[in-house]
Length: 111
Image (tube, rainbow, N blue to C red; front, side, top):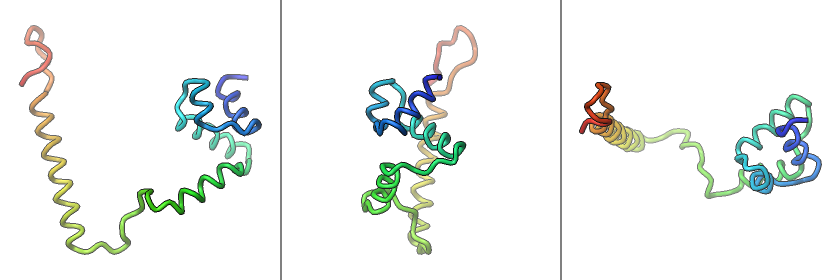
């Protein structure tokens, strides 16, 4: 049995949480969660009670990010466009300010 399968089975059979497994093995919770979900799909396993409770709790959490309004107003869209344009300008400025120099002997970065 490889390490990945050992971690998956430990989660499913010993009711060990993702955080404990992360601390024990030094592998991210996200990776472990994805491994478990894929394993459950491949083997046609139901979600554990812990997974079901977590999923339902997340749906009720008012602090979680939600999908945007179904029908945004023109003003909402204008604000979004302005924010994205500002981000794009900052990105382009950073790209031109700190571009790598490809010529040898010129240093690492051109300013």
